[in-house]
Amino acid sequence: MKQTTIQTLFAYWDGKRAGRVAPRRLEIEPARIAAILAETFMLECGDGDYRYRLAGSRLCELFGYELRGTSFLGGWPDADLALIERCMSAVCSEGAVAHLVIEAGIDTRHRVELEVLLLPLLHVGDAIGRVIGAMSATSLPHWLDKGRLSSRRLLRHELVRPERLADDSVATDAEPAATLVTALGDLRIVHSERRQFRVLEGGLSNGKHSKA
Image (cartoon, one colour):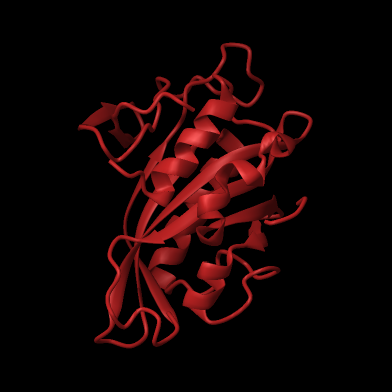
């Protein structure tokens, strides 16, 4: 079965992570994921904002403007923004993995579903300072290349803390460790005292663009 962009990026990131909370930014080799670069991006975490440092050509084409330098928080309706901010904070401060499903459209009639994966990267010391992500349409309607996706809204999300080393300075003991593996497998629910996580289990084990 051919892997999707989301699955390919997760498998690569997970292989580089090698049991740590996240790989380092400089361990990411764009040439190793060349086939999906057009749908990948990198964000910088800082001061409560998350700005695109790099964005693939396909994504810029879909949204109709150069994403680099703009904020990932821009363009969301007020009803979704607080939740998006919480997801991003968990990725950058706790090393969580976020999987979003969003709807974007040209107008009220032409809408498409997109999957978004957000993965933490260590940047300076043991701090998470970058997020590598991918965004890909779950289907390819005939009109997708005939307009720009000017609106977006959040449909659903999963937030999962990956496996971590016992002495990892980024880790906390708030919940049991859990690993987001792939959308190929079965879905189970992991409960904690504070929150419920949807964890996707599957069989993957293997595991722009410029310096950012």
